[in-house]
Image (tube, rainbow, N blue to C red; front, side, top):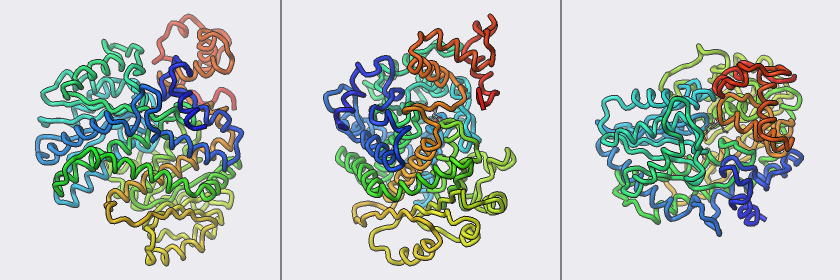
Length: 557
Ligand code: S6P
C-alpha cells in the first residue's frame, strides 16, 4: 500500500499542478474520521515515506546518492569554517518552522563547539525575528528585502559565509531574496538551499518589486552547483500528512539533513574522522531507526493523542513541561498550532525549565512582548497552575528531569503524562523515573539501545527527533479529533501570506469544483466580509488582501 501510494503521490499525474510539498497525501485522505490509534498509524506510514528509496520516479530521495554527495560537500565547507572561525560563519535561515529549526540546530552545534573550547560558528535567522520562535509570524515570509537586511546584519565583517536557506516548499520570498543576494556576492557567500520539492517545482510566482522568482533563483543555483559554487539539497519526502503542513516531514527532514552534514564536519575537525559517503549514509540510517524506535509504541502515543484531544474538545488546554532542548521541541510544536489549526496560544503551550536562560536566543528574554512569551516552569506554576483542572492535559518531556513541583501539578489534575527517553539498561535513571511514574496517568518510555558506535551527540539528536515526532502526533492528532481538519486539509487558518492565500483558493476549488476565479472571489468576500466586492478590493494585490486578513479572526464563530 505504501509503495503504491508513494508511486501515486510522486507521479506527475497525481495533482499535477501541485509541487510535492503541497499535494494531499492519499494515505491520510480520511484522517479526519480516524480513531486516535489510526491517526498515529497513518502518521507513522507517512513519516516512513521520508526514507523510501527512489522507486521508479525521477525525484531524489533522502537516501539518494546525489543527496549524500552534496551533504558531504557541504560538510567539507563547514569543516573549513570551523577551522577558521574568526572571519567566517555558517548562517541558517528560514520562515516559520524552518527558522525555528535553524535556531534549534544552530544552538545544538554551537554548544557542541563550546564544549570543545572552539569558537561558535553557527547563526540563525528567522523571518519576523525571535518572536517568531514562539509565535506565528507568517507575513514576513513574503518579504525578500527583510531577508537580505537580516542576512547582512548577521554577516557583518565576515569574509566567508556558508548560507543555508531553508524553504521546504522552495517557495518563501524571504529566503529567495537572501539566496539572490548570496548569488550577487559570490566572493563572500556560498549559498545552500534545503527544501523538499524537485527544482522544477520551485515557486515561479512573481515577487513584488523583484526581478527574480524562487524558481529563477533555483535555476541560477543549479548552474553554479555544477562547479560547486552553490548547493541544492532537495529530496522529495512525499506529501505531508496534513496537506502543506511542512512543520511535520519538512521539519524532520531539515533536522536530519543538516545534522548529518554538521556532525560529519565536527567529527572531521575534532577527531580527524574523514567525511565519507558511508559515514553520512550510516548517520542517515540512524535516523531511520529513530522512526522505528519511536513508532514501536503506537499505544503509548495514542493515549497521549486521546488525552490531548479530549482536553481540546472540552475547550481546555494541553501543556508541555520540558527540560533541555526537548522542551524547545515542545515550544516549537505548540507555536505551530495557531497557523495550522487556528488554535489560540492558550490551547497548546510549551514551558522550558530555565526559561530564556536555557533558550539562549539572540534577543534574550521576550517576556515583555505579552503573556504568550512566558515560557519558564515558574511561569507555569504562577500563571497556569492556579487554574489547572482535571480536563487539562499536562505532558512532561525529558531525558533527565528535575524538580518542578510535580506533586502540586498532580494535586490539580490526574491528567499528567510523561514522555521520556532512556538508554537500555540504565538502572539509575529507572529508579528516578519510578517516582515520576507514580504521579503519572501514563508514561511513554522510549528506550534506546546502547551502542558503542552511536555517540552521545547523535543519541541526543535522535531523542530530539523522536520527541518531535511524538509531539507532532499529539498536537496534530488532538486537533484532528477536535474537528480542525477536513479530509486531510487545514480548514481553520488565517490567510496571512501569499502561500496560504493560494492554498486557500485551491482548497475552495477542490471542495466546490467551481472555477478558480469564482473561488478567489469567494475568498475575497470572506476576507473583506462583504457580499459585493468593490473595485478597490478586486484590483488590490495579494499583499493587501493578506494584510487585511491578518487583522480578522474567524469568518464565522
Ligand atoms: C508549516 C508552518 C509554516 C512554514 C513556513 C515556511 O507547517 O506552519 O510556518 O514553516 O510557512 O515554509 P517553507 O516552505 O518556506 O519552509
